[in-house]
Image (cartoon, rainbow over all chains, first blue to last red; front, side, top):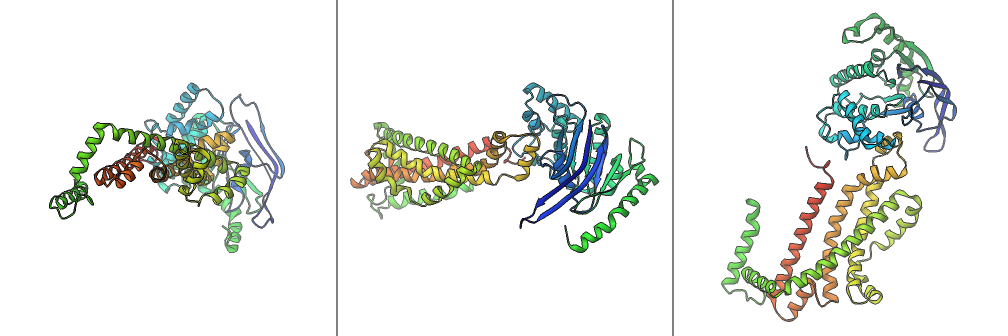
Length: 260
Length: 245
């Protein structure tokens, strides 16, 4: 399934009622089975973009479309949250089943699917644990399993690993790539970490600071499967430098204005 | 072991003090004397009759008040119209000491069981409604957003996010309510009743039967302890995710 973002703008009213433009005429497409990263300086409307894709917001202008057949009972998108957003009163298995319940899947099917994705994300043996009994990395596995379990057309990830420590983050990135290698799930991956974006993605959409516009879409000419050994490859280094050059002045302006 | 030292020591000192005869039994009967009197009252059936009546009143009042409180608290927390109507109403009526309403309730409902149950119901209703409302209102917006992103509708949000979010507050309300209901039970039974533990205590005082009076007080503290123990058990059962790993 392809995702088409066509001239999308989003304007909010701020606390005093003044209109604030978060996104201005953003256009790009996500190909089926692509892992697309979105990077930009703080306050570039990355989260707004994800909320639009998730259908939690309707764009002020422009069009969002999903092209292709979606089997019945499967939602177009599912979200993985930066702060995990797990239900503390549900066990790992019950958390993973949540989206399936809301999609109205029968109980037996829910169980089976949840178990499959619990295994896939390396949570086997933790089914009956509660979130507070897990480490940050394990919690985000639950977040990923919960989103994958509904088998969405597009998986939306909102800085999924930025709340984790550096080592865990690196391991989780590798694991996500391994899972993606098996499922070929279309992913839109939002991050402020340029390295992460380049290392994981097929293409990187670079947004400007508010109001967010597409500065450039950078192709990452790095073969798959990706490994740690590729971190020094020229293709990766060039892409990172290119993106940093695009964002640098924007980030500097943002810093000067004290905007967070 | 060390925890038992205080109460046991107190009882021992108390027993010794009464044995020496310094304090007349009319003012302070000995612990063993109270135990003996309790045993006697149990055998005569008097004790069970009082406890049974009191239990019936408090369980009914507590149950009704808790149910109504949770229902109203949820409604006020979820629906803006219910909030607009209910919130000022609760704020205005909450500060009234519920026991002050007993004469009115007796006037309306008669001097029988109904007025006693009603005053307990009212006493439990308010902490339950307010706690439930607060719990629902403090549901994590992130979790609500996550639920909505997975397609949860309003009813799902209430049942699967707001209610579980409010459960710890609901249990805190139950504890408050348990204390209040015991207080109101005794007060109501002292004011207008011819049975129940409150009546037992007041009647014993009128007859200068200090030992029976003490039996009543011990019964009340046992009731208080039992409700605390029961609620703790229930809470562990209902909130396994709050317990430690």
